[in-house]
Amino acid sequence: MNNRRTWLFTAAGALLAACNRSNRKTIAVIPKGTSHVFWVAVESGTVAAGKDFKVNIEWNGPPTETDYSRQIEILDSMVARHVDGIAVAASERKILTGGLDRAAAAGIPVTVFDSGVDSTNYMSYVATDNVEAGRLSARTLAALLGGKGQIAVMMHAPGSASTMDREKGFDEVIGRDFKNIEIVARQYGMSDRAKARAAVENILTAHPDLDGMFCSSEPSSVGAALAVKARNAAGRVKLVAFDSSESMIDGLRDGTISAMVVQDPFKMGYEAVKTLVDKLNGKTPPRRIDLNARVVQKADLEKAEIKQLLMIKT
Image (cartoon, rainbow, N blue to C red; front, top):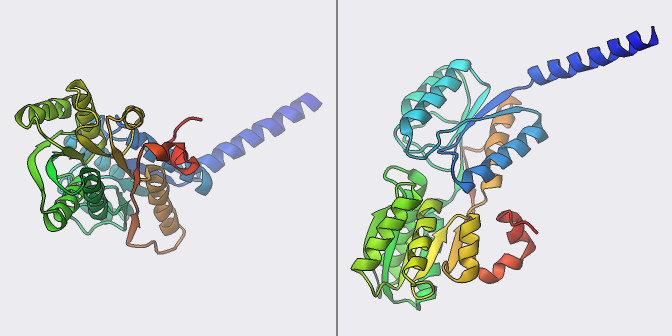
């Protein structure tokens, strides 16, 4: 009898826990892609927020950042399921307009994160101040070059609002403040490390005396570092990379990369979920939350806060 009573209490507890889980709100998080380290860090932030605020996180994104049709499908499926909130990073600023309209019509709050959209049908926008991050990148490269030289820009992909803003900020500062620096080449990496490497190989062939380069995203940065290293141009070509990955950290350590301008993807994911939780709890989240980027150079890698930011194992 005692065993039966114990079993009943255990079963009841399990049922109650299951009911509590099923009563939790569900927030869908749709990144641009899932194949780069940046999005892994964003996901970690959303998972942490889910635990802190006791909501279910459903993470689903296209495998690559240029699979636009797949991102549209995922957004539409989340709207059709009528999840409680959606956080989405748009791969291209125009493609999700219809899906955002449908979410608004269904009464589903949407937070756009990382990259902006050509729509007003969203609640909050959480992102790095990418124009300022581009300006910071330009000042960093100019300092490395002593204010003069020929440089190239490895862009990300057409229509990607976040990287376009970085490129805009970079061009603005170089054109306005550094008249002795000339941008002699620019190419798209198309969110593909191999394509970025091939593009940089071509740039280095066409401009053998190139002094520096700015890359506006992780895949462009990784591809550029591989090309610079293969051409034995490490250190001679000052490379300012954007975002971070294990191979990029290695490149910073060995001198292939001169500096990285990094975001806080964990915080970005966490804050995106928090805005939706606040809305579901009757609060009014800010329309825009700007996060700051920062420069990381080789000596900074030993700092505790940088190790935490870049998720460096100690």
